[in-house]
Length: 483
Image (cartoon, rainbow, N blue to C red; front, top):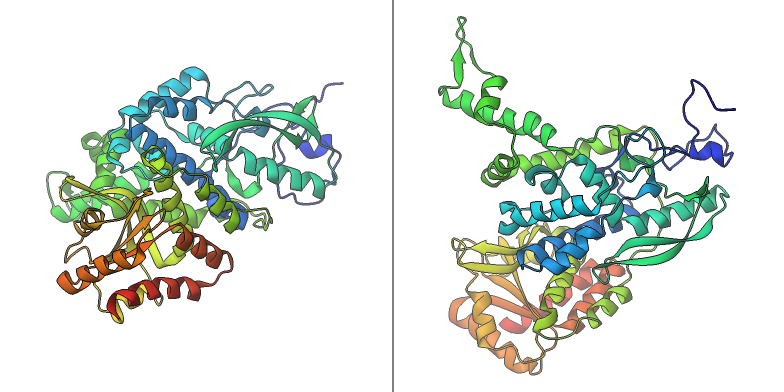
């Protein structure tokens, strides 16, 4: 007999789990969607190795997508976006009946592709992550962010589901799963996976801390709570036409006046964020702080497999030397330098424009080191280095003066005088070392070179959590130039 006037049947009820316990997963409805959103910042706030791996995968997909768009690679862009179909297995959304495919269909994917390709923020490289997408690209709202996140993290969520099923003795069945993003190959693949079956349909579970009823990530929150408040303070301080003087002498700037002058549009949010980057960074920082408070349940401490040093080295070895795969090599180095250097360097940016857009730097970091190698570059070696520059060369030939001069052209008294050139192999290490020494002696500029073997060594040091060994390897490179 149908249930009357009660909440729909839950996943835990279908499998007759003990209802007195707290579950680490979202207890979705068995037959219909539950009104929640998957929040990438909720995942980030979990602070586990599993969530770190999820963050890496989101960044990898997103950077690959943006780079494909900026390079005019429409075929790859279409493949990356058209694979983002509905993920009915997670059971999120606002459908009151059975899951109805409220995800990203082919037509929507084409619309999203057009929005990405037309976005000035994407073309300029100013978009850095999914949060920026939600703010600066028309049509990319919290629903789409939830869908995109579910698609990108399908493999991680399947792994989480399997662990929860084993923990609670929930039966699983081998079923086909399509459009699983493999960030080792930078593409979506199809596979089979063991999943729980509810009324004949496979289900994928989500960590309870990863979902929100009303996610903070969105244009409205950023616009109202950060942008308008910043502008109100700015106009209040300026005392201009938007500032009204009350009878008691108090100066006020009304929100309705600000909304009229600065209407909520993606283009405006982009232009504002570009002009006031600290406001955007503050918003993102607040997202991370408030995410853990959205649920009372404890944070997860799920142990899952993450990429080992050998896994990463195998990916590197699978990238062919030469111009055809220079893009993949650049992506690999970008992601893995962030992983290796950890908290030493901050705010990594790919293809950063300098000199009014006339030049680009492959990768640039802010030097945020407090006591390690990059800190000592300044204090011990007296090398000015507020920025750390990296150039990637997927070469199978010798690195010569033109390549060194290219990196050298990124240096300045304000930006710093230290950089790293990363290539696949160095045929004549003594010759390259002498060329780098000449730069030190001639202009006080420092360039160290790393090849595949160095990257492999650094990856293993990182896996061993041997920060001292990482610092010493880099230190030895500098010592070779001054001894």
